[in-house]
Length: 412
Picture 1 (cartoon, rainbow, N blue to C red):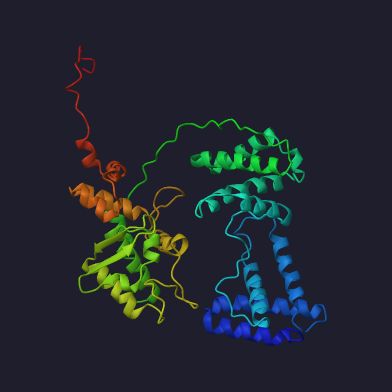
Picture 2: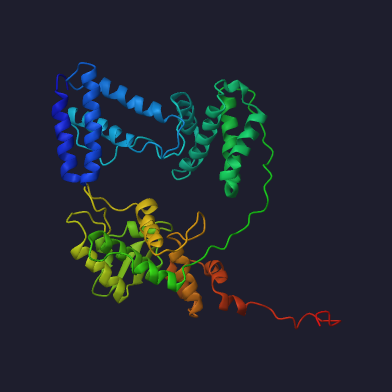
């Protein structure tokens, strides 16, 4: 659209934010709008320009080049406002998200981004596999960027092994994947006539993997967590229902985020859902506390919307919770409020609810078949991962010394 006053678009953006965002967030959009208006005025322009908006957008990206993904903070509101203005003046509805960055943690400049995308297009793998391979490939191109290697003819055996050393600290448990992607990258480089890329990479020697026994929640910890949500507040009602549902069923965070209103059978006090991980259906009973908490949230805390999902965000535009951030952070929030120590990789994540359920069922003497059904597994072998968490049951497996003949009383 040509010769459209910028002021009109700014007014629409601010009105939308006033109606759909909390005041604190609305103030941040106000600051972004003031900045954009000032920049336009500095250039003597009162009319919207898609090209000038793109120039401002590139300034934001340039400030962030090479920085960690969480460094943009206030710049995201400026970036979103620019996107909303573009949509308004092009007759498009506002989007739910205007991502300043891709979901990948490292920022590539345009030169390396182009090569990374071209490598991605050369991959022939399953739909769910390509993002995993691409993420590691982006690490490789970021390594080249950090070393300022722009002439790919210089990439050789030493370069590849230096990259493997670079990846090792953050990929100790999956260096096999890194090796696989590195070999694919070498094939890709040679096909593009960068002949110094090695034809073979020796296996990157690693120590045997050690399986870490992650903890479950103690009953006392669970009780401390469950009393923290404010059930007089809509968000507190939602969070309490999520925690209660997880504590009495042990279902995964992603299955909670995907749970629909139609999945619940209120008459029979059961719910049925399709597990995201396995694709198999699972029916589980709900106890009185879980039924009451979910009903209280739906009737007195859930936003009025036609969305089919049970658990929603508290601000517009309403959408289901993300299992990787929102649902997981519900637990993190109340673990902190309960004063429970939590360290990185200590196992006190949302998945600890499943470990707790498995350990409790095992400790109660439940039949292995029933435990597998409750947790949605199709193999009794799953019990092996819960046995180390139940010391009483683990003790049953211990052997005494009777089978070992003692020739002298060495311990007396």
